[in-house]
Image (cartoon, rainbow, N blue to C red; front, side, top):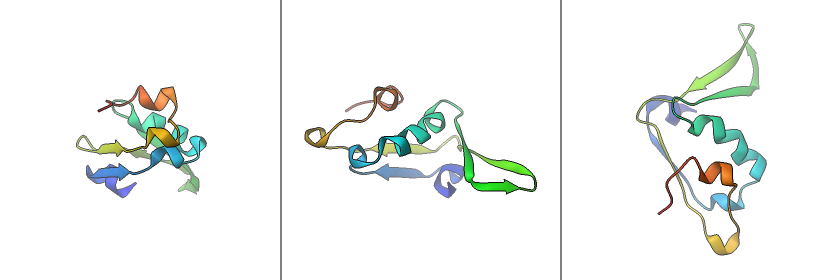
Length: 81
């Protein structure tokens, strides 16, 4: 969350080995102007925490296609090289 809010870059290596439910949780964050509702923190001052991405935030997903894929929804939110 700190990297997202500060505009830093994040590398998720071997992302296709991650539980698909975890990756699906990141989908709203990867939309333009994306944000992430952080339910895990519970209520803070009576409200759910919403983390918003900095304009310079970037996420790089690396995977080995011989070991599986990521969801179509996740692939649609990026550029494949």
